[in-house]
Amino acid sequence: MLLQTVRPNIVQAIRAYRVEDLMQAAQEAGQHFLYANLTEAQSKQDVLEAIAQAFLFPAHFGKNLDALHDCMTDLVHKSGAQPGFVVVLEQLPDSVKFDREAREQLLDVFREAADYWGDRKVQFRCFYSFQ
Image (cartoon, rainbow, N blue to C red):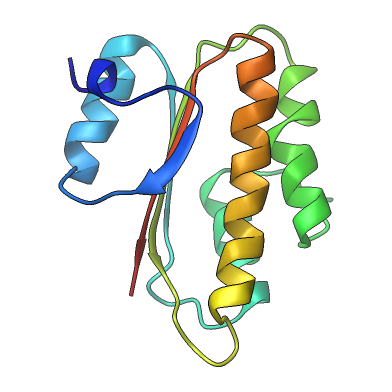
């Protein structure tokens, strides 16, 4: 199975993995599959809005990195036991409004979420690609 070849609780470039294969692997493992296509996003706000919409965050989502962290950790944890997560952030922007620093800050939130879930013995794998 594909997920057995990827260390749990990691954030990494998608590289040779295909989104369809990751989705199927998540289904086979009984894990949540969260996918956001960020092709249209150009700014940090665009990225956060696209993720919130794709991941079905609550309407009160604050559209900032702290709120993203809360939604990826505490909010989900409080809803009950979790089977694991496969997250795909496809086509992160590379623009003046979303530069390398902004990308790293965003990916840091997902790294913190991976650590959070790892501490709770829940697998959390996040894959990303750039435009």
